[in-house]
Length: 359
Image (cartoon, rainbow, N blue to C red):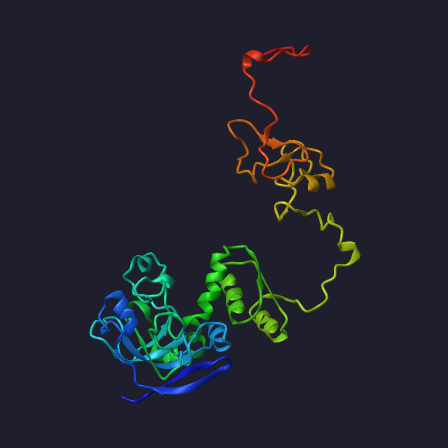
């Protein structure tokens, strides 16, 4: 077999391409010894790397921000062709074009079965979770190389069904190993859904992936902010609104009043809650009610002398055993709400003089 050229860390700000032996179907010695597994990896494959990306995480090591030792191999965003497979691999064949997730997982431990493959318990003796070509991640060789060994191939590899179509789109498909899933995960974790308004801070590769993912998840508007005009232009190319955050953002004098009206919508900021709240119509009178979860200073500013309602900040519902929990004016968060009324037994109700039909 041929040798294997691979990118290696040589100190802060320095990398080199070195030649290592062709990889074998074996797990690293430190993993095998610590986990009590056989070094022979019949569950793995050897990939010939077709394309790869440089991740920002690689930059952390290259710039000396980690404890990476001299000689640390690099690269965890891998797309490649299977050139050799172990006897236990059943669903991937030689010649298949596959995307390799950046994290290594066994598919057998509890975390993997629950979908938490980023914290697999069987691939890194130092801690849960592992990756190719990264410091303190179990000693797996990196993928910025000619060849790389992928363990637990049936679980870890994403096989493209059409080889020719995959090779024609290989630069796009390379994003599937890390960049695009990272952006999608961010949008999904943020709760983006149908009709959402989304702001993405930063239009780098992951930021653009997050913006596009927000559109896939149904966002109505996606706004991307950045300093770089080319990045903003790229965001605009697939339908995002953009904000050049290097531009002057000073508000006009007529826009600086906290009670500025925009149409029929007024928004006020509650300094305790840190949220924008939207006034709503009162149920009975049709007049505008004030902040449901506002603080006393906010209510005084907008002319509301009613007591401060803590039903949200204190965890109360709209009703608590038939009573509404409120605190007196000037109360602070954390004080126990007082009950401004109590249920009165029917027998204690005194009829009014003008009642024609007393209870």
